[in-house]
Length: 148
Image (cartoon, rainbow, N blue to C red):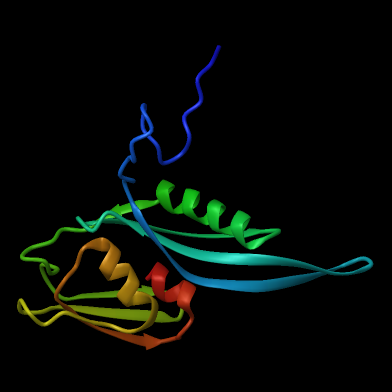
C-alpha cells in the first residue's frame, strides 16, 4: 500500500513551511479566435521567492484561473534566479533592459525601504531586498518589467 502525503502537511499532520512565498502579479483574460468562435483562457503572472536572495517568475495560461496559477507557480520554481544582498540592499547600481522595458535599480541606505512601483516592488519584496531605489523606464507592461 502506498502512502500519499497531502500537500502542505508533514508526516504526522503537522504544517510544513513552504520553501517559497508566492504573489500573483496579474491575472488576465485572453481570447483567441478559432473556427466556430472565440476560445477564452486565463493568463497568470506569478512571482515566487524565499526573501533571502532567490526568486523566480512564471507566466502561463490555463482554462481556468486556478489552473493558470498552478502552472505559473511551477514555471516560476523552475526558473529561480539568485541575487547578492549586502545589508538588505543590492551591491551596486543596475540597469536591466528586456524588450522595450528598462528597469533601473540603485542601492539605498538602511531605513529607506523599497521605493518601487507596480510589479517591481513585489519582485524585490520576494527577493528579500529591503532598501532600494528604482525607476521603470519605457514600457509599463507588467510581464516585461518583471522579466527585466
